[in-house]
Each structure stands twice: as C-alpha cells, then as structure tokens.
Image 1 (tube, rainbow, N blue to C red):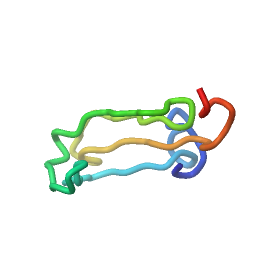
Image 2 (image 1 turned 90 degrees about the horizontal axis):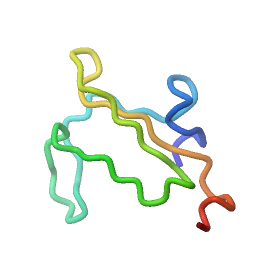
Image 3 (image 1 turned 30 degrees about the vertical axis):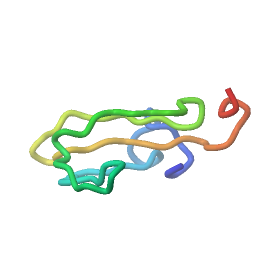
Image 4 (image 1 turned 135 degrees about the vertical axis):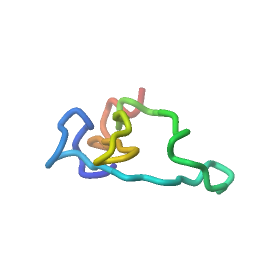
Length: 74
C-alpha cells in the first residue's frame, strides 16, 4: 500500500497526504477532514500515522506498508 514503506519511514519514503479538506466515508458521503479518525484494520500489512493539523500542511498523514507478507495472515 502506498510506496511500500511504513509511515515511520517519513518524508521521501512513505506515502503522504497533506492539505486534505474532505474524505469519503464508507457510505461515500463527503466528510470534513478535520473529523478524520485513525482506523487500521490490518497493522501487520500497513499503518497510518496522523499528524497534527498545522498552517503549512493542514490535515496530513503518512500511510502505507509492505503489503502482503506472513504478518498479514495473522
């Protein structure tokens, strides 16, 4: 998922979103990004690291992971 790197690898390695204004929930309803919550259903495969909103990057987060591995089967 993403670049194949976990969020802890940071800039230049892991996938990243910034200045996010809205997202679509599970019912495909647009929601304000300020209300986003962290949900990781399979942390053996990927992770999500939400950062504090700030003036330069707005709502921002790192995400991703190596994807399929033996850890994903747990």
